[in-house]
Image 1: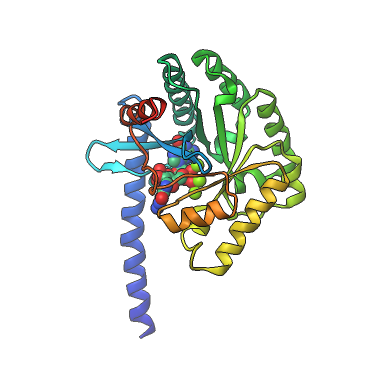
Image 2: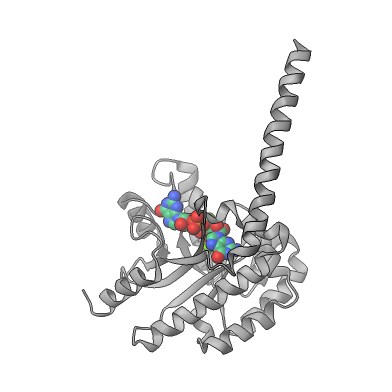
Length: 281
Ligand code: C2E
Ligand code: MG
Ligand code: MG
Ligand code: MG
C-alpha cells in the first residue's frame, strides 16, 4: 500500500511539477516581452466617499492580455514579476501611465481626483524608488497630492526600521500613502503610529461576511476606530452589497470600493463615469 501510494505521489509530483515549471518558464519569457508588445494595460476602480456618494479616488489595477492564454489576472503574474525583478520596469510603467492619465483628466477640465497605485514589496525596497517617483511626477506634472501609493501591511512591517525612512521620504514629496490589505498582517500599533500614513484599506476578507460574522464585524469596527484615533482615513475593500454598505456607513467608515458601486473600468469607460459625475447627473 505504502509503495503504491509513494509511486502515485511520485507521479503526481513529477507531472504536475514539470508542467508548473514549464508553464512558469514560458510565462516568464512571455512576461519579459509583454511590455514591449503592449500586452499590459490598466483599469481603474472608483473609491467612493460614503458621505457624499462621490468618486474621490481611483485604484490602478494592471491586467495582462496574453496572446494565446487570454486575460491573465494580476495575482497570476505579479508574483512571477516580483521573483524575476520584472516588476521594476512593469511597476514603473504602471506608475507613469496612471500619473499621465490622471494629468490628462485634470487638463480636460474634470475635477481633480486622486489616483492610487499599488507598489510591490520589491519596488518598495528598491533604492531608486524615490527618484523614480519624483521623475514620474515631474514628467506628468501631476500634483503629488493626487498620487496615492498603496503598500501592503506585510511589506510595511517586514523591516519596520528601514521602512520608516522610505515612508518618510515619500511623504516629504507630498504623495499620499495607503496601507493595503490591512488586517491580514501583524502590524504593531506602536510602529503604525510612527509612519506618516494617510489611509488604511480594510482587507476584503473582513468585509465579505461583515454582516453575518460577529468577529469580522468587531474587527472592522476596531480598525475604523483605531484609524480615526490615529487621524487616518479608512477605505473598505470589496463592498458587494447594500447591507455591507449600510454597516460601513453606520460605523463611520470614510470610503468604500467594490463591485456594488463599480467594477474596475478601462480608461475610456472611466472618463465617461467621471464626466457624468462632474455634470451632476
Ligand atoms: P488589491 O490591491 O487589494 O486590489 C483590489 C482587488 O480587489 C482587485 O483585484 C479588484 O478588482 C478586486 N475587487 C474590487 N472590488 C471587489 C469586490 O467587490 N469583490 C471582489 N471579489 N473583488 C473586488 P485584481 O485587479 O485582480 O488585483 C488583485 C491584486 O493584484 C491587487 O490587490 C494587488 O495586490 C495586485 N495588483 C493589481 N494591480 C497591481 C499593480 O499595478 N501593481 C502591483 N504591484 N500589484 C497589483
Ligand atoms: Mg491595492
Ligand atoms: Mg487592497
Ligand atoms: Mg486586497
